[in-house]
Length: 241
Image 1 (tube, helix red, strand yellow):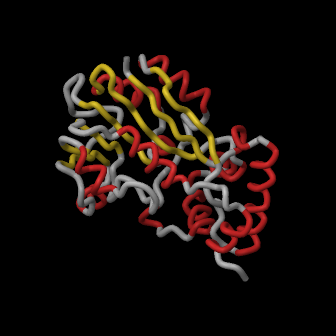
Image 2 (cartoon, helix red, strand yellow):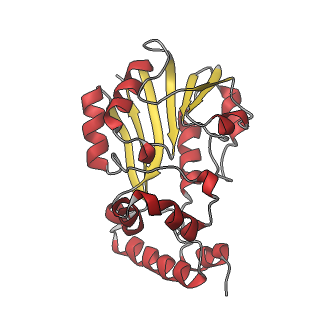
């Protein structure tokens, strides 16, 4: 059987891995000397292999503060100027402290995302930006994940992409559609600068038959123009004017 990467190259070469897409957005938003807060920072700013590497992005900034509820990830992150244990809905920073706030695959884990948007807007300086990538609830696999009991989601995530249990966290999908993001942004006083649904690589990594079927479905959806409705991921940039 063809490998996961081989199936992608053969069936959906036009799909962009969500971490590469996010890295591309960061490259456009990280300005020299910016004050940067990475929410839910974990051990890396992004996990893409194309575009600007995390250490090069961090070197542009005046400093990069990472906050997370899981200390082990922060301890392993090599590019942070400072790390803190903090909830995204209660950030321990004064108003207008940052020029850039980012969240890489974080929004899906927040039970009530509206307070997070309000907090991000509070700590952003005028003209500051909030960039994020998250799963899109319109994708059938993501929708299924949102519907099954939370106690079985970790087993499903392990089955689909072989993630270790230590890397699987509770999900809520409270803000994982463009419409909900727009509402939360408007309520927080943030303007939508970029909001795009796109197809990443197949969600299923095993078995090979499932990867083939999903890759063929992705190709069909991309060819039909329905990607904006059923794509797997949502990338956005909001701005505080």
